[in-house]
Amino acid sequence: MTAVASGRMVNSLTTGRLPRGSVWMLLIGSWVLLGLVFLFVQLSGATKSFNLVGAIFLGTVLFDVLIFVISLLVEGVRKAKDRLVTSLVATAFIVALLPLVSLLWTVVQHGLGRMIQPSFFSMSMRNVLDGSGGVVHALYGTLEITLATTIISVPIGLMTAIYLVEYGRGPLARAITFLVDVMTGIPSIVAGLFAFALFALLTGNPGFRSGFAGAVALSVLMIPVIVRSSEEMLKLVANELREAAFALGVPKWLTVLKVVLPTALPGIMTGITLAIARVIGETAPLLIASGYSDSVNFDLFSNRMMSLPVFVYTQYANQGSIAEFFTARSWAAALTLILIVMLLNLAARLVARIFSPKLGR
Image (cartoon, rainbow, N blue to C red; front, top):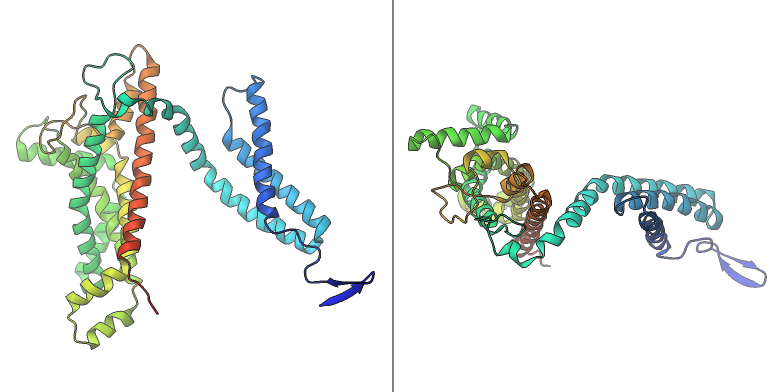
């Protein structure tokens, strides 16, 4: 619709609108403004550190006020109310992310300085009495234990999910589902005690500790997560795909292998990644089943093996005469653990994208 005003054509559908990108510019500007305010407060000596979370939260609140006022002046009451409600929804999302932002900011702030030192990834804690030493023994232990846990858990969990979705009927399937639900709620310390008691009975040595025992303990926690996530992904595969394969004379096992699993692969990979992230940071099971050590141990089946979560715990709980050395190594190891989880998520997304079915036209 158009109208003539003062001798010129005016489009009533495009007048009174904020420029494109103004909302993002206003949000970022609000964050920057409050960041400068908090930076000034820090430099004045009122606080010891920069409050990133406070700057983001108050900047978002300022954005809510500004977007409503500016939209009211430019676009009118109706559009201003719409933008206010939209900004409040975005504010709720940002507030939900603030704990994660606070966690990442705190870990990076305390751990980055020690992590970038060359000795951190080239030394263990063997015979270390000063501020040197590193996390190489815990890093190797975490990677070996997590790999062993994945090798144990993924086939068991995936085949259990396939049975429940494709074959399971009757009391046995219901019993398996019930047991999986019970395993999901098992405390991690109980899984560690189970693995400790199991290997103590098998070896006859009450003090037996090994990386494989820790992997078994983590498998108890990882299997139900994989079963549940894979089961839901397999249920999302359309029955028409199965029926089309059956109509072509494809046996059921081959249909599951060639049709169902490739279709559900992205979701299954996401579930496996979440399961790995669930167990890679567990401390109690590894502290009981694998123990801790200051030296590098590549043998998964004998002797104690250090892991990153246990390293963080022991460094923070057993501080020496100069506590700063121990807390710095603890924060740096925590940051390393977070980076490993992020890399696992990126790898899972890459694998899912590569192996997911290609929907060509």
